[in-house]
Image (cartoon, rainbow, N blue to C red; front, top):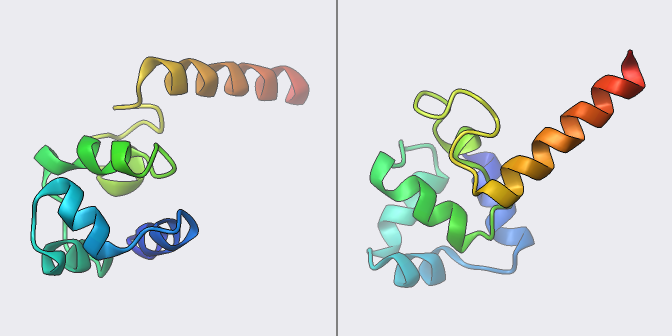
Length: 92
């Protein structure tokens, strides 16, 4: 899973050290997350916000965010729901 996190950190032009500074944790902690260690529930939304929601709570912790829109801010969730409705209309 966390290959996704590694890729998105790189795509955003961020570094693990930079994210660690913003969260207030050692870089090694973020490195462990990027290498597959479970991200604590208390850090999921914070990490998503730092990543400007290019990674979702569902991608990071599907065990506690089982639906793709769970944990998203309303703007993102509403947009996602509208996209789903459009896709459903197209494929109906």
